[in-house]
Length: 229
Image (cartoon, rainbow, N blue to C red):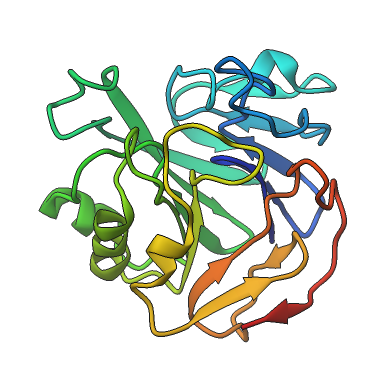
C-alpha cells in the first residue's frame, strides 16, 4: 500500500491493486485563502471524512465520482472503523463537537488517522488503537493537539511509523505551528524527498515526515522512493 499526503490532513491510500481512498479532503482556497494548497486532482474510488469541517470534508470538489463513505464497514479493499472523540479538551464545546478517528485496514496494513483530535488518548482509545502500522497525527496545535500531546499519542499507541500532518506550511497560514516543533521530540526524523510512502515492513520504524503533495510549487503528483534523514 502507498500513502501520500496531499495537504493539511488530506491523504490518499492506494492499494497494490490500485484501488484508492482519499481521507479528509480540504477546500482549496478555504478560510479566506489561508488554505492555499492546490486543488486535489487525484481521481479516487472512495472518500471518507472524519468530521464536517471544510478543511476535512470538501468531497464536492474532488474530480471524478468517488463514493462517499458514511459509517463503518468494508468498502472495496478498505475496512473502516470510526472511534469518536472530542475536538478539544472541553468535550468539543470550543472547536465544534466531535471527530472520528479513522482506523483503516487494507493490503494487510492498519492505518490510524487521528483527524482533528483535541485531547490526550483515553485508556479505551489506547486499547482499541494500539500498535497500528501507520499513525497519522495532527501536530500543529490551536485547532488540534499540539506537538507534546501528539508525541504522547505516538508513544502510547506505539505505531510502526508516525506521519505528522495538520501543521503550518507555506500553503497553510492558519494559526498553527510548524512540524519541526513536533520532530524535536524524536531522536531521529526521516524526511522523504518524494511524496510516496510505501508501507513496507523493511522500512525503518519511527517518525517519517512526508512532503505535502499539493504544496504550491511542490511536487503535484511526483512519485518515487528516495529519502533523507
